[in-house]
Image (tube, rainbow, N blue to C red; front, top):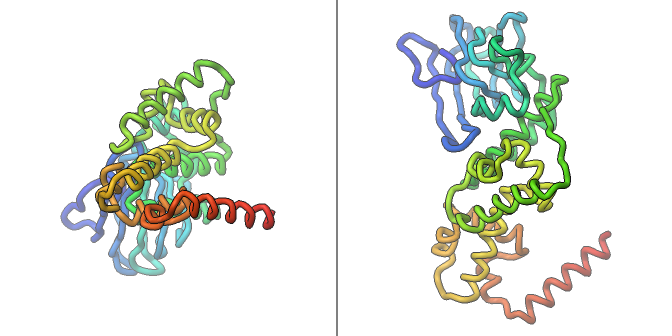
Length: 306
């Protein structure tokens, strides 16, 4: 069966697949194949556009370009309708992290070939281990472990696709970033949406539609105009709301975390510490004078280090 499909049919290679992120323009799955060494293989077909980063194991991949051996760190690139075959001649089993893309958004990013031709978003099927790809995979797993937002995972997914496309000599289709009133109006519309709905699960598609831009172009324009990514801006708005509640109310930290949009307490505390420099509990107990002294002290250390 295809690694981008659903349940395993009767008689197929034993496997398990768990969906880690189901919303947005990029869906993320953990795939584990339990086939033993030397298990028989059968022709399969990719059903979705996806990037699979090998986390563990060794397996063979055969396509129209011939056989290749994949192990930890390799990336397997799937075009819909592409035929392939997986073998386990050297060892049994493997584990992959799969990023499945909304095809319209992926096509806007990298193109898909001539009209009427098979959908080919990726010119090759396999890429060897690359530090930048591995770094993006690590960040995605960290964000998943922290209970991160859909928006943050989408940003990482599109960064992954853009980097892989560039590695294959097919850089993303980049629209010129013109310094225009229209661009600022688009970003303002997205900022207003974040401010209005910061406690909700906003996606890259939601904000790009509000801005009237393609998702990848929206990411670039937003970063240029604000200095931060949409995900970072959303986190900053949530932390700003939390600051007000911590100072002006006696509500529990956990309640505040959920109220401002965090679905996980540890994610809230880590994000708060990263943005503010201390934990929510410590911020609540600190007097304005102590806080000013702490900020000035930290600034002095930073200037000395520079």
